[in-house]
Length: 95
Image (cartoon, rainbow, N blue to C red; front, top):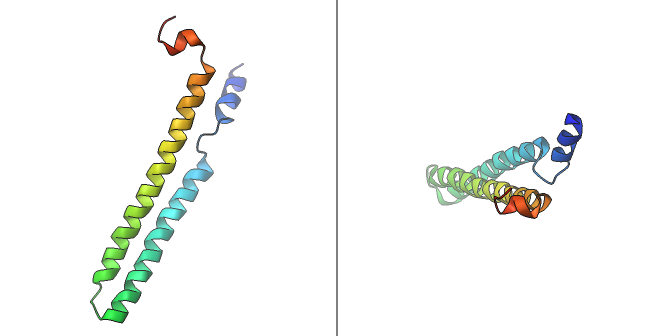
């Protein structure tokens, strides 16, 4: 009985461990890409690392925003799925 409940909970469309690992890789890749873009701009303009530092912060900010949107969307789907699985008497908080 307990195993059936666990398998039902995991079969939802929530984020899995692989999804979180993918977000971590995406986070790191965004920082590295923006770092190299900033270094390229620094080489072209002759600025001493200003755009490289800015690139790191822009990459981290963009990656964090993307991660935040994915997690909140998954949480919203999970909440909607849970409320749909409840009976009408449990949705109102009455039993």
